[in-house]
Image (cartoon, rainbow, N blue to C red; front, side, top):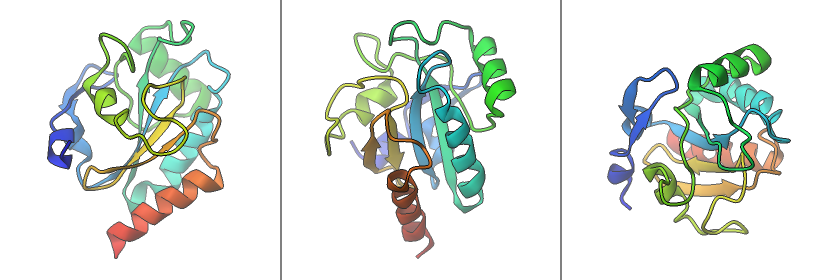
Length: 167
């Protein structure tokens, strides 16, 4: 998929605003499928910390809630936004709930999961998998749920993409 086609993918934000991935053109984006009742839910804190640390350099964390793994995101969009804001101080953009796999897979995940580098080819395995997208829309990395947002692995990958943009 060309990067320009990635930007054509529609998104509905958690507040109901219709947009597309084009809203993030020129930004480094860490895309994460999230859930409020998962063992990895505390990663919201690390994701918010990354967002705060690198937002001025062009990083956006984009959370896409999904209820596909053991019903771990059962609430409404309003419930999710309230939980994330009150519990973890989340300010990064989030979308309405989506399917990240299966018959009704969101088009963004249909494209993201084509990235087959590393140990995680194909399907999303669980909540809090992360994809790194460059400012030109190229998917360059994928991280398992177990990789903490503020890990050296993720921070180094983000800094590398941000440095390439600055150069």
